[in-house]
Amino acid sequence: MTTIRLTAAQAMMRWLSVQMTEEGERFIDGVWAIFGHGNVAGIGEALQGIGDNLPTLRGQNEQTMAHAAIAYAKAKKRRRAMAVTSSIGPGATNMVTAAALAHVNRLPVLLIPGDVFANRRPDPVLQQIEDFDDGTVSANDCFRPVSRYFDRIQRPEQLLTALPRAMQVMTDPATCGPVTLAFCQDVQAEAYDWPEAFFAPKVWRIRRPEPDRHELAEVIEVIRAAKAPVIVAGGGVIYSGAEAALLEFARKHRIAVVETQAGKSAIDWQEGLNFGSVGVTGTDAANALCARADVVIGVGTRFQDFTTGSWSGFSNPNRRLISINVTGYDAGKHGATGLVTDALIAIEQISAALGDQIFPEPDARLRDDWYALSDRAMAAPNQAGLPSDAQVIGAVQRQAGPETVVMCAAGTMPGALHTLWRAAPGGYHMEYGYSCMGYEIAGALGIKLARPEADVICMVGDGSYMMANSELATAVMLRQPFITVLTDNRGYGCINRLQQGCGGVAFNNLYASSNVVDQPQIDFVAHASAMGAHAEKVGSIGDLEAAIRAARAREIPSVIVIDTEAETGAGIGGGWWDVAVPEVGETEKLRAARAEYETRQALQRLVN
Image 1: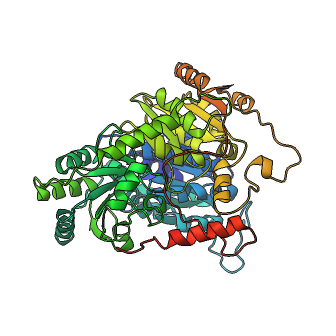
Image 2 (image 1 turned 180 degrees about the horizontal axis):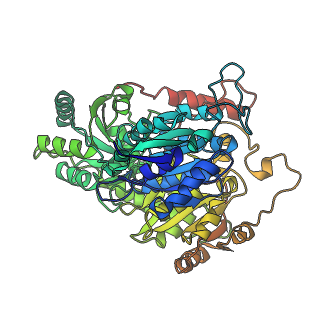
Image 3 (image 1 turned 135 degrees about the vertical axis):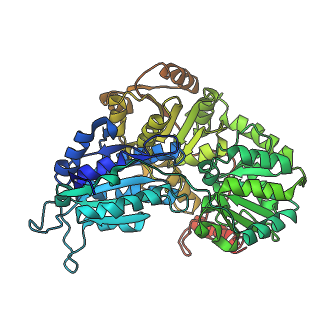
């Protein structure tokens, strides 16, 4: 057997560089890295040595560079991914939040945090967490519950099995998610005689699991008997590449489609059978259809509470729930009639079985009335005062084209965008599985790296921008232009509204109701400019539209700041969300909110 003598870190990077997609591209398309004593000597040397065969990108924060990697994978429809390496200690634990985000959203990312010495000779090393009762524990054990596969590399030869397992997880649609390979820092530098065959290029194909014939027959029977079915399109439609098939299915059998956050933009908003977003942040049209539906066909959705209106939205007492998903876990939720299979295969086989069956036409007036209402909500204001978030969205919408991708993650904007944004195919990118504040700037960078031709517009509130903005500097360094529309409502406006809607009083969300000595006057323009971006503040909706047009000519990121009012949000649409209201309290407002909460709770239907 021919062998090659390499350090463990060198072997890892060489192996990753030859793991290929069916299209002949690297599956791991680069490594984000912040070096510290736990990875600079081993992994750092290996990355420098492999050069452009596995490019290294330098981030500003471990969490946000992992967010960029995750957004890249999402924009690539899980067909390609990136790796992220950090030192031990705080560098590693900074990535735990990103791992959770990837886990919830079923997105592939390879996390390679440095770890303590396997030989334990210098213990305790700098930044080492010492467990008084368990000598095998390190800070990286925090990754276990938020990784789809976790391994600790304590011997070089363990990579011979750990690396293939990692790739199997990231390329399997049923297990796809974050992989953590905690890499002991002394082991990174150890040499080993590796089989030359280990480094032969390998093509990883994304499988399409076929359905069980009994499950398929049961689902077909339920759909055949339906009088008012509706399709809930989730992210699995996009990851499966089933967008065109779903549209053909909906048209052939005349079934309305509603969209989750992850499924939005699978079908063009202009399609007459697309009734828009569903659930807590849903359109009036979609929620009305779902309330009447006797069969709800979930395709590639995990039925998050925002999708289901905390399980109060699908309220027909005779309704049946179908869940088509590549994972049995998601397919079996809430007593659904499950079909464990790939979305594209399911759609094709169900359509063939239904033949020429056509269902009663959904009420087009619901859709027409909704778009008339949303036109008014998004129109430019004709009165003095600060604009609403809906009016800001309207301005961005009027400047959007077929290549525009609007993206966001947390706060007011995800809900307002889900409700109002009119997405062209592939034109919507939302991280709302984990609703992670601070994803936005890094995520926009990741999308632009994945889709350089796209017109990426990042929508972010002042609260989320303050949490994590440093990858704006990285975007400048990499000359990755995108537009950030920063809405400043002087605090956490979304949660302020929720707080009061749950019977509380304004407290500790907006700066005006927080325990501060001075109200802050944050100069976001100066801040973004200091990182090298073009930045400006606009005073009106018209000026915002002009600034967006001008930004497209630049080769660096642009940040456009606009003050907004904090009270309204989307202003229209939506459904109930189960946020527990205190059972006892001193104010009449709180008691009324609790009574309303109990009324809504009674509408929840938790089993099929």
